[in-house]
Image 1 (cartoon, rainbow, N blue to C red):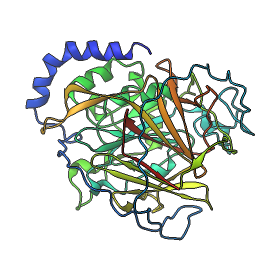
Image 2 (cartoon, rainbow, N blue to C red; image 1 turned 60 degrees about the vertical axis):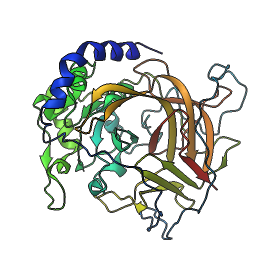
Image 3 (cartoon, helix red, strand yellow; image 1 turned 135 degrees about the vertical axis):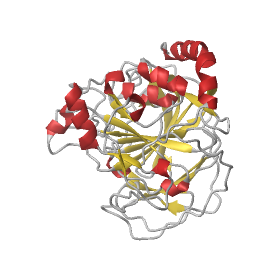
Length: 407
């Protein structure tokens, strides 16, 4: 564990008394309006055609009553990473010595290695209220983190590296977890709006020169008007624009990754069947269905097929990674309803469940230094590889009982 916990605690203590009163009384900016407190909803019926580049054509409906499997904390493994004598999966790539033409965030070979000589860009994307769906650009992201914002709703931070996306959105305000994600991937960060204390923290992060936000008077954002959507849901950006801004600053340079994930086409041994995954957040229900023909999981949200507005294709991923971490309510007020910002402590280690190739693999995630990525190990300390391709991280609290898995 590193000093981020100490930094956050001290900074909150010193700034809250000065800023929270202003934050409560002043009207929010157009890019960060108040969000309604959501109430819990029952899991919806997940139906709709799964369409993607290699899309299955069948309509998929989740089973009626899968067994609930809780993501509860487990004891830390006693072995050090790689110390056990278990054989590595065939074709393992990483965590060290990635070939020049392989993307370290996906384990995929890229047609033009020059795309890896530019900065990854993390972008904050809305996921609530439901009218913001379908969002734009999500299927082009290498990594997507879905996490609790406040009031039981979720929000996305998407990391774009190997592919571009135009447009991306709608863009929303940053949260405490966004003090961490850009560090892990040596990325830039684009967002719109933040509460007063978080804005002050953003001014002091090591990646401040790579932040792009109207909060600090930056360009790079535009409105795509929609008569059916409120003004705050109409802000967008795109990776060419963001990278042009980084070029002007001299910041569109190759990233330096402190640690790497590992990938293999061949899954590890001893997985358990996992064709359907449901993540029951308080006010958002996420459902993934595995398609054997494409080797990918396809997503439904609140009972409806979740598509990418840029292509009309359903959101899909090679890996669904359920990361359990300590969630701490802070004193930072995020909206007029009084909902408090959540500090998701993605440092140290904790339980992880990786879903790939229609199977589930349980282990531990680790992040020992603030510049490290999340990396994954089995309970014996062996590297736990992802399937080559994009990954969707579902962030949940320790002791989470809303993870439902069925064969």
